[in-house]
Length: 187
Image 1 (cartoon, helix red, strand yellow):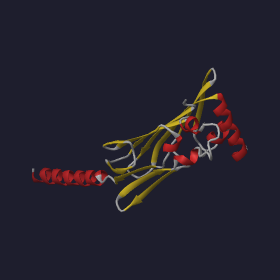
Image 2 (tube, rainbow, N blue to C red):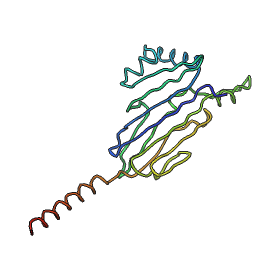
Image 3 (spheres, rainbow, N blue to C red):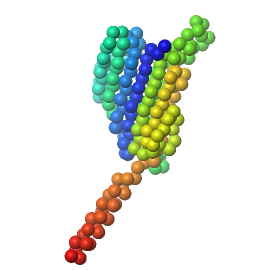
Image 4 (cartoon, one colour):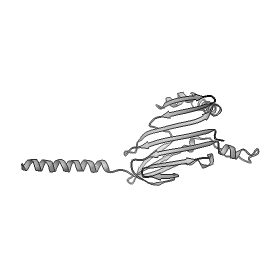
């Protein structure tokens, strides 16, 4: 029984800046109303107004009792990107986005149902090959996390070397110009 599905697509540039952070939430009207109500309690604004006030684009597409919420931008309150000793280190504490699903006692046998009510699929692209991560799958500079239960929610972590290509390109271009100048000067 999946009640909500969250998909995140994130991309980082070589300067350690977030180029894009797109979220798609597929859920039903009950969960939507909980999210909207929680937004009013925390910010005094509707979910839409709270998100757009942060400079992000927001869209809702309703189909019967279901809604797809799309949030697009290049910032996130949960993402932190650090430059450490020649590496870019990416952290996204997405666990802060979800309420705690810990239940004491499980009186009605609902903990398994609640645990499987939320799935998260997270896709990250870094500017260089990822050398360390807690992802389910890594291929070159891309990583994927698939958290199919609330109890599997964890911070997203990935690390790559800071690309040095622009410096090499600039140096190579200067060398080529210098060599061209010498050749033209001899003629």
